[in-house]
Length: 467
Image 1: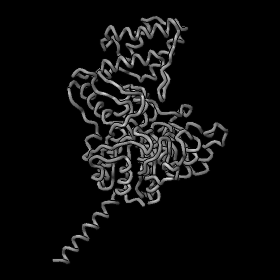
Image 2: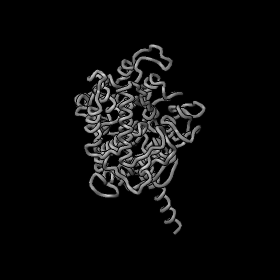
Image 3: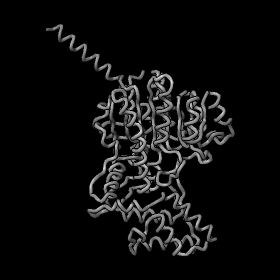
């Protein structure tokens, strides 16, 4: 009896050890700025568009394991993206601004680096620049997130197989603004093929040993366009996800780890632009659908984890009444930033002599105001007063947010659409709200319940059996 019991214990322990390392393929999705209400709001928006009160589920919210995570950094109750990205990549808290370093500026080991050391192929991808805070936290080790050139030079040192994003912010100038050797020859010397656009990737990837995918128009390195503004040929996170799978599974199939960031959810929330933010969450979900199709082919070997680095904006669903009107957001056709461009274009075309009727026509076409959405007297006054300041008195106080400088009239129009939809915002910056955690696949049970963000990479490493 005792011998049978010991054998049983041995088998259980063996199974437990096996379970810790059974995730051959790991997808780590990070929705930058995507708090609980960004997800819930998107699902309620989708339901209202279809004429019902409630939610219409995104794919990732239907995954069998769900939890929430706290996000504070070692120095601030409200984290920035670099400290949060470092926590999500290394499992260690650090100061706001740090990339891959602890609070004493000592180099940390990231989960991506652990995967590489364990023989996996590794990818890091985003919809913003590859040297931005969250992707950088997986391959770079720098004292400041603003050290874009120095971060980029860490890319070939990490030696990962696949990188993707919009481009690089400072390819030939150091943090202290000094001229420096271009990063592109450094990439080439390290064996990377640089390809521009998804079509170019499909042609090039069979021959490439290591690859960096950027958008076609590399003169705009900041980010790929918002989903609401995207046109044919623009790079998308779904395409990037497909490219990562294709590249990381070619040749010897060692398994892979890939981090994929929906970086512009955060940007839209810094702008307090609800329609754009919800469309970014939908775009994020579309990329997860690509990963899920891969999971269905390898369900016992694939782990998909979804979370966020922090919440942005303190979005509120409801402004005092018991009603929401999120369906109103469907009539907003472009982001606040693209509306700003359209207003500025109209200003130039008319040599600064723009009538109120012409402004109303533009806002009706691009934002649905008056055309599909009734506008109250107070709301029209807000818009008309801004028109008078900007176009009649030529007093333009441009609206500055974290990633945009907008025509003031564009900001007011977005505010009116938010009011009509009954969406409120606490600020134009990050908050300390919970972020969601979802998981499916091999080791997904590790991500159930409440946790701190530093637990997530530790549990991924455990599921993948990384050194």
